[in-house]
Length: 162
Image 1 (tube, rainbow, N blue to C red):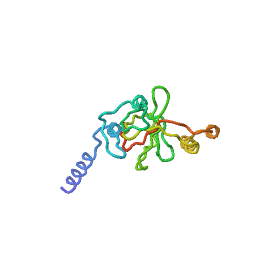
Image 2 (spheres, rainbow, N blue to C red):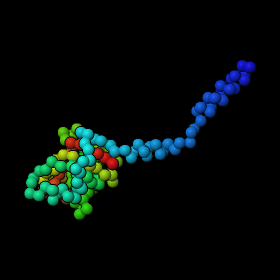
Image 3 (spheres, helix red, strand yellow):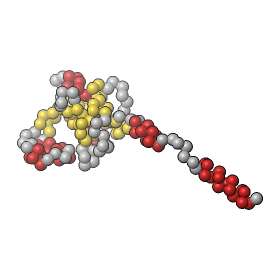
Image 4 (spheres, rainbow, N blue to C red):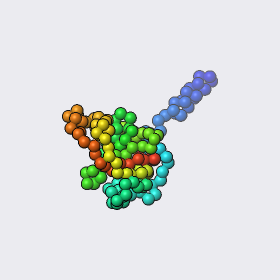
């Protein structure tokens, strides 16, 4: 009788631990497809494509807004900046308010919604060289940077990564 009870308990344990056939990669993909919120929690309300940012700014030197774009590059040291690619080939460098958060290093190619302040700024030669280093550019490309660049930049208080 003890032997029969032992066999029944063992069988019950094995059947309760049996794989249910659920594909674990599906669970991971579902979790990975959820938006990732970084910095302040923001919404998608009122978002405009990053391509329209220059037109939205007009002659203003700064504008509080929310834009969306495809991530072209991310700082490979710690994710402290990213670039959003525009349809015309230009890009917008995005930094993060008070360095309060950083982007995942592998998020290039994904879509980001950023909420914050767009502004026209002059980026120094030293900063341009540092960005080029962070982006993994060759030394010749870094050395070719000889003058500051007036450009449209964005300081995000929050990001939704899709």
